[in-house]
Structures are given as structure tokens and as C-alpha cells.
Image (tube, rainbow, N blue to C red; front, side, top):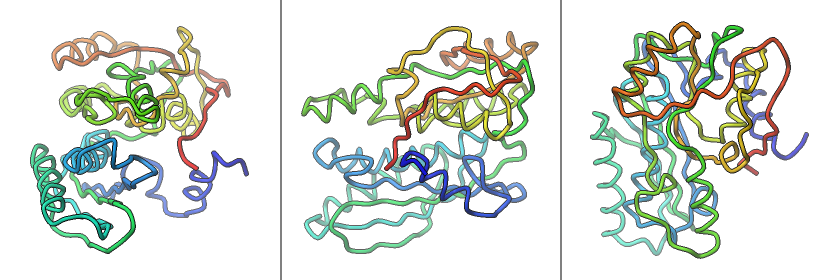
Amino acid sequence: MPKQDKEHYLINSLSSKHIGDDAAVIGDTLYSMDAFFEDVHFKREWMSIAQIGRKAMLINLSDAIAMNAQPQFALVTVSIPKAMTESEIDELTQSMENTAKEYNCEIIGGDTIGGDKLHLSITIISKSDTPLLRTGLKVGDLLAYTGTLGESKRDMDALFRGEKIANNSRFLEPILRADFVAKARPFLRTGMDISDGLFCDTNKMLDINKYGFDEFESIGDEIGRSGEEYEMLVSFAPEHYSDIMQIAEETNTLLTVFAKVAKNSDRYKCKSHHF
């Protein structure tokens, strides 16, 4: 098994029918969880404590937003390094609480442990009557992504070189497309957030639906392999193109249609961001 497949290998080894989307859907309730670990997802010298808390919460809220769900509650587990001060702990918790409140979500508990590094794991419980799933593609559907991709990887590479990046960089401050998803939901066929890069996440959507794609124009690696973007990957029928583009304009959302679903087995060359 190649290294880049270990995460998917583990996920695929689980037998629950609820696995496969950004969140598990049980009735009208959705459950999701993501980790945000020091020296895996970030380095302490890259970000302030407040930025760490905010991004940890945003990337978890993104799973609910991507599925057209309203976040309700959050459970937070934190591994606290011995050198972390009480004021830093206050800064972390305040940042997470403030970010959650922006989306009408409340932190209701979790767990804390001592550790060598700052690790966070957050569970989001959300509600939706019309969740947006990854399944349901049809041949001829258009594939599109929101926003401008590439900034997250570009700035992460800069951080590795010891350079500074802007405080509003997408690597530090992902943009969640809650308004676009909510308003476009009646016209969307499938959707998911882009956490592992456009190439890898498009492949995931195609894999679960057992289709391929025809690309409209070539996409470079600097765009296609930029992970942690948390923009949206969506699909919709061609007859809804005008409706979707109008909603994109109304919500100030740049939307790029880059391919259509086809009866083939074509996939992007994809390199996992994990392991």
C-alpha cells in the first residue's frame, strides 16, 4: 500500500454506512471531527495562539458548512504543553469560543490532557434538513470550485522558508462559503470542502460516484495540489448554470467551472498531504 493511501486505507477499513461525507448524517443531525496538531498542521512560530484557536475551529466548522448544515455544538479536546501559560490558554479558548459564536455554535465540553505539543481535536454537531452529500453525480454534471486556489500552499511554502505571510492569508484564515452553499443548495447535486487539494478531492468525489471527468482546461499543480483551502467543490446540472452563477454573484463568490462528469475512469495525479 503506497504511503499516500494510508489515510484512505484506514477510513475504508471501517464498516459504518455513515462514513464517506464531510460529516456523518444520522437523521437531521450531522457529526464531524478534525484534528489540528502542532508540527503536523502548523508550527507554533507560524501563528499566534489566537490564530491557532481560530483556524482549528474554522476547519472543523467547514465540514458542517460544506454539507449545508447549521453548527450547533462543539466538543474540544486540547493537549496542553507544560510551557503553555494560563494567559495563553485563555487566549486559545477565547479565540475558539469567539469563532464558534460567529456561526451560532457553542462549545459545550471536551477534554484536556498534558502533552509535549499543542494538539487540538474538535467535534462539531450540526443540523440540516437538506444535507449536501458527495454522492449523486450524473453524467454531464458540471464541476466547479469557489474562490481562488493556490494561496494556502504558496504561503505554507513561504513559512517553511522562514518568511512572513499576511495575517489574512488563506492558510491562516480560511473563508467558509456558508451563504453560497445555503442559497445554492436547491441547485447543487454534490459538494465537499477542499481540504486535501482540488485534485485529490475531485478524485474522491469521482471515486465514490464511480465516474470520471472531461477537463475544460488544464489546471496547474500550484492550484490543484494546494491543500487546506477549505473552499467548496460542487457539482450541478448544466441547466442550472445561470442560477448558480447568479447566486455566486449575489454572495460575492468567485466560481470556476473546470470540468464535467463523464463515463470514463480519468483521475488527476494526486499526492496526499498526509504521512
